[in-house]
Image 1 (cartoon, rainbow, N blue to C red):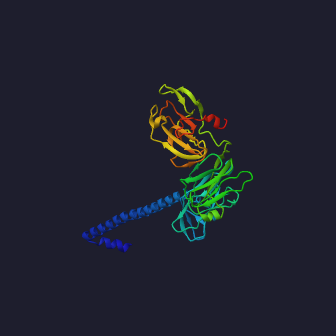
Image 2: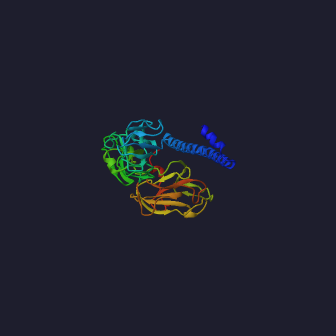
Image 3: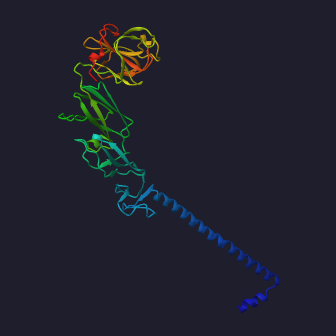
Amino acid sequence: MKRIIDWIRDLSPIKAMTLMLSLTFLIFLFATLIPAVSSGNKAEENTNSEQLTAEQEKVDNGKDILVSKDNTASSPSATSASKANTINAGSATVNQPKQSAQKIVIKKITTITTIVSGGTTKVLKSVKLVRSIDSVPSLTNTASTPTDSGVTSGASVTTTNEVCKLGNIEVTADSVYAPAKVTFTNTNDKNIGFYHWSFGDVKGADHASASGKKAIHAHTYNKPGMYIATIYGYTSEADFKAKNPCASKGVTLNIKKQTSTGWVWPTEGKITSVVGMRVQPVTGEYRMHQGIDIKNKKGTTIVAARDGKVVATNGSCHSSRSNCGGGYGNYAVIHHSNGLYSIYAHLSRVTIHVGERVNAGHKIGEMGSTGLTPDTHLHFGIGPTLWVNQNVKNPLKLLPKR
């Protein structure tokens, strides 16, 4: 140290000044570099912390779950999943397939309610679509299914795609009286690849059913009675063979008994006029009324009063108190096997066409107020001539008692 002090004293003024400037520069350089290095380390730590927080939020929201090589669901959050082989959601338990490490995204776990035979409501729980970056085997949801004779086994449901859904079931019939051909049409279905129709049983009758890929099927009910038809939906024919439906709906049918005379009432409503002389309510003329008037609201269903063939129709009228359609407005005329004709007048809509054969109870149109009439009602007549305007019969003597 003494030698250094003596060396500094022996320096010339210029050399001493140069040494001081060098020392000052070194001190400034150290003062600048040390905070910059420290700041860089802190920035890196903050970036890593933000990434970890983002991943944590994904796991906590149940969106992303990492499956490790040992098939254990794990994540940065302890709330995402325990180190087990299952992931719980409500009452459904989803088994993770054995596979190598990959990322799985569970979209949704949902519950659907289905209507089954007998009007009973049951809950069928299913796992909605599970997607992944790599292919993943289908998941199994252990939930009971509705049972029906020869259709379901009550075994667990295996879902390989999104949960299927039965939309609307349109039911049409050629008659409400036995024998009645009823057609079932499924519309707005979702992921249905196969159907099974259970048409319902009457006491002592054999079980009637049908299966297929088409969304429409017809069945003839030969005997009157109450029927509960149940439609089951399957994602595939394989699920049908395994008796594993994913949805079902029930429809109640009331097939009526044919009357002894063969005639049935063409509509519901109040009788406001009968066969006989009267004052025509629009023209004020006193003349013969060739049938009966049945009053109800617009759109009320009109059906064929007896089996027969359609021989005349008109559907071009839109106004009341007019001579459109010869005063009948929109109408339909049916020729019956006993030689008589029946006419249905003042309709708002005609739903049959000339040449069509109809059974008693088959819908032919809807009630309206077209033609020479002041209000909404059905004019119904029976007679031996095409326009039912000569030698008419009294419908009240042919129709069944009400």
